[in-house]
Length: 223
Ligand code: GRF
Image 1 (cartoon, protein in one colour):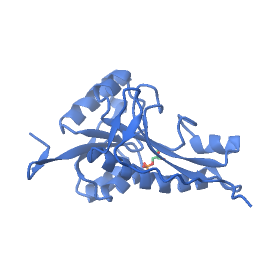
Image 2: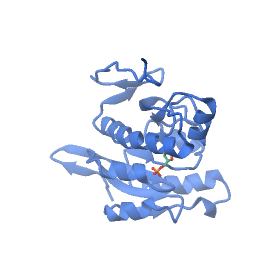
Image 3: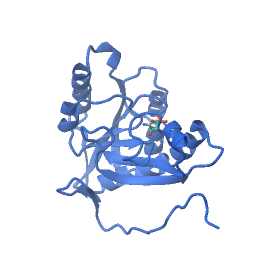
Image 4: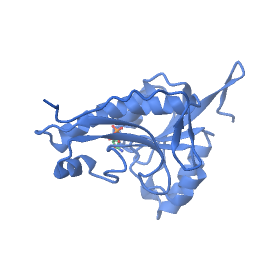
């Protein structure tokens, strides 16, 4: 079956969203009126609350349970089969908490986008907010990037920064960062679907005709 939608000679891009948990980023994408079709939401966790949200939005859901597989290679193969059945232009990792094999990442080179709760390349990996607080950084944030086999180190599309407050806990900081994740993730997908971003030979994201406003976030405030 051809899952691409042809509208007056314009092919609407289709995306598949991968989740593992709450799915608040997925929800932000579903509610953002993106210029693409969300073909399916796939979860590696059968009880991910995000699956119910996807269903409420009328999106097909699939479960590919990593626990049914002896190793990453086998899980990634089934995941790829499931993804390929939708022929997506883009695969979006929205809180998908599995490390993907290099083989999987290569298969979807330049078609795989992730959101990460830190200002990469700082704080790749887990527990980003607690580690940022531990280090006493004054500015923290989130990043949307293309996925490469270097975990959390692929070409950066967009970032948002927030001030770190003196009384922040990992939970309060995470909540403030998450609000910004919900803003920048739809923007990155919109740019991709509209053909506004590309990759340079050196592996950097190039933006077509976008102005850089040059504003600064200074934290704490200066006197
Ligand atoms: C987000 O902070 C995302 O950046 C990280 O996991 C969290 C997922 O949240 N990878 P949700 O499932 O989108 O609500």
